[in-house]
Length: 553
Image (tube, rainbow, N blue to C red):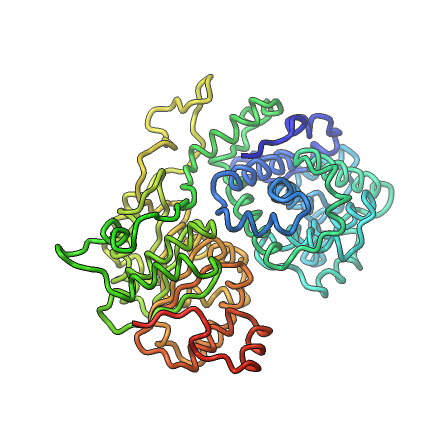
């Protein structure tokens, strides 16, 4: 595990009085507020903890491969982007929203119109977009980066509220510079504060010496998406006043090393977010593996298709497509689970998503998944979700959610950093399956390590929608199992093919199950996962249908 640099704890110690007046969070009910530098530090701390204990290894490897410093650079970049994501709040367009806090900033030399004077123009400067432009300018002036080089990093800040800005939005804001900095005598003061905060973020993340090498990096779109998702999750956690209180007594003394660590530890213990699945490649034979993982009747033997599934999962490219065809009753589901365990161990995937054609088939699959999970070796709790529109009506899932209901809030720590408040969440609770309260709702549910859902939960990854990055992160760190793949119509198959292209780009192992899959459709699925270049090559060479990873029973 990588740790922050020693200078991290003093990154904000020398901020000017003006920079300290910039605000990041405000509670209208209590009038409590959080300085922007404090929210930046909290977001960076959460991103570091997420990276260390929650992000699957497969996702870390994807980011690391794009950077010259490998794993170290990957963690530093995630922390840095989480730290700077809200720099767009240090602008007149954002700061004017709360009169009392805006007045404090004016007294410190950061002049700005009031909210009414800005009028409708403020809509052109959402703080994510404003932050993207400020980060790009800072990288250009401080380190000589081109707009193309800086844009691929800064877009993470631009898209952290769900949708990356388009060229028209960027151009419109560029024509209204007063939204970023009040023009006139205080323009330099605004720029100075913005750059001062960004300089502090670079120190906080330990990246000051990395920009020269990163300037020549070309971040793949997949990496930009998963980094955006990690920043979104970090921001949501750090924005919870229950976990990171606004009360100055809780943060004003957190500038030292111990104070920073205690603030994060108290929040993380209160959140108690289960980590990813970390399977090891099973060493036993296929027969022994099935006996360990599934409730086989006395004297039962595994089916040939199941034995072949295990063999293929061990020998095929780890990030590949495995199609299992067999009649009903041959144990395709168990074969898929066994293959998923092996492929997850080989790729570093942190979970499994099982997609089915209907809610009814999803409800039937859910207890089968739970039965398998209870037999898996595990050294910690695992998060589980049933993901479809009527999941609340499923008795098993409803019971799990009721058992998982609790207050999520920072816990009290004693002098040794241990939980001191009676009844507080204990991060060392026994291993088990959890319907974690924080991992609920349409946008976060699939971030659970294990999920059973309808096929639309997978197809949404191929549609344009807000917070699409979260769906991509959810599938990027899992093995994806798609059952009854023959059951989808031409319209759904178009989106499924698109999603397969994304899954291949993320190097996600995919297992598909079918009893009656036409050969032509099988080739289309394999071609979509393999990519157009491979498709054209296959057609040119007249490769047979069995040229792709396939199991038939």
